[in-house]
Length: 64
Image (cartoon, rainbow, N blue to C red; front, side, top):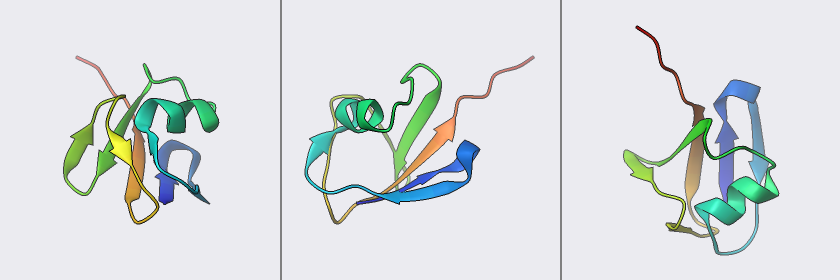
């Protein structure tokens, strides 16, 4: 799958079916600090992603 990591401005290719949680572990990203999006769908840690998916990882932004 193609993975775009916005806050690091990098793109990586990851092979194989896995959960979002496993993907974040592999990329050494803290799940509390990012949102994972496929198309327009926000994914949870237990969602499965596959080779044909294009995933975008965005930083969590908060403020007031």
